[in-house]
Image (cartoon, rainbow, N blue to C red; front, side, top):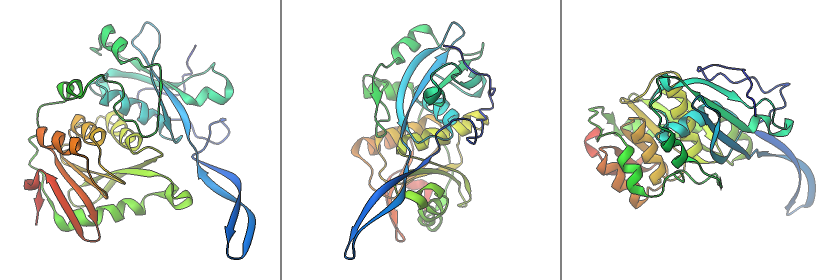
Length: 298
């Protein structure tokens, strides 16, 4: 299967218009039932399609994973996912990112190949171990490893970042994230991940049907811009903070994770083990700090 040459390592994707790419939104006919009766109208729903991520170390592309995602920022998603899986160590490992050129038209933009540079140290056995034949759901974030200990082993040493943020700034970040969720305004059916400075300035926000995909898009954007690690930044996620969210933040060197809902026990354990600050239930002026309280100024 040959690849197109629409982009280099910068990760710039072709525009959606006129390319045959599925957009992030789709209009469907629905029946609305309320006190006045039944009405037929059109509604917008979020698009969910598979994305096959392939790696080409120079001897041909190998399929690594298939994940369900919302189309958009696909190159960021692919490299962010591979970075979280330990298959990329930084921007210098990426020679090019491409869509597939000779797949069926309806699937062309559902296959992304990441071509590795000569400086990549990825070993063939690592690529073989990472290969997955099953489709992962939009809620699955760390399916590429056989045990949690393997995840911990490939993460960097515990973070030593001395960055601090005021509780007042933290309390306002979920609302700032919400204001950046353009697609959520249309459908109400998307998660988001946003990167912020310690002063609460938004750096970038990504949306996806899966919260872990949204985080991968954020991390992928940092990698392609050669801005890893994110040692002085804050990751804010909608919904809960599960193990995979903290794992991806730790891999990217992001010292503080805040969520509008609850963390899980494994997320708390990993945050404490890797020196991250984990804050949950950040809403209505309140929050609960589960790990790394030294970074939150009260």
